[in-house]
Length: 350
Ligand code: MRU
Image (tube, rainbow, N blue to C red):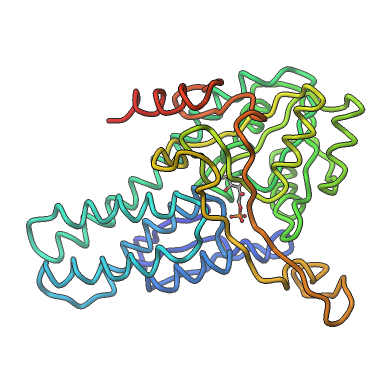
């Protein structure tokens, strides 16, 4: 099942409620764009490409929920909805990328308001379908980097749940497994929201891929003792020079990988590459509520004294010098990223 999809019987956006996994599998439905925005903020759905997919369908809902009869009024309405949706989360560029793509379609419609509704739903569906196809292509390129017998450290959740389907870094691992490669995954639990131990481990179990969960601070030990051959993670935004913003902890993981000569790959669709930003220092980094750090788990049990305060930075930026290669749907890009990445992205722009 796809992580986010349009239900053509009910005309709703539906998505897997990721906060309840792995205990409960539930699909939730949305009728309004603003509610999709809240679902993104609250992380009912998360992961950069999945956020992009949800944003596309959210915009289609915006066109549908408005009772505007004429084209100009509906165009104005979807633009207003877009500006609110844009604020849902700051770091994953796929959100703005999908919204802008939907707005371009809305602005190009010349017929009736209903033509706009139809065109926007069609575009949202295309974004979702393309995501799956792109992930499968990335997975083929990335799987070629994995050797039989490899132990791989994976950070956060980058699988089907982080995309419309299949995944980025976890999609690579899944494809390598399907190719018959004997691999073992060390799953960073990924504090504070535990995307690794809750979601990645759940997916790996479903796929029958051998794994062990490790706490994030064990990664250095496994790398230093020669027990890891590859490190794979995704990205929420990659700047033009190849700096990678990804789930908090990626930087420390990449540092430890570099220190131990273990290759570290970021797997990203080109929709995650933001050529408008020269370097990673310009990427907006989300800070979330301290409750996520202070709670022992998502049920809110306390792991800290009453009254303690915390910081909760959701992403960090890994400098390009620590990245071995950036895997995209069009192939793998290697250093020097400041030269090769923009050239590579532009080569495939339609
Ligand atoms: O805060 P999240 O769970 O949305 O963060 C997700 C990640 O950092 C993923 O690694 C990233 O989106 C890339 S993989 C699809």
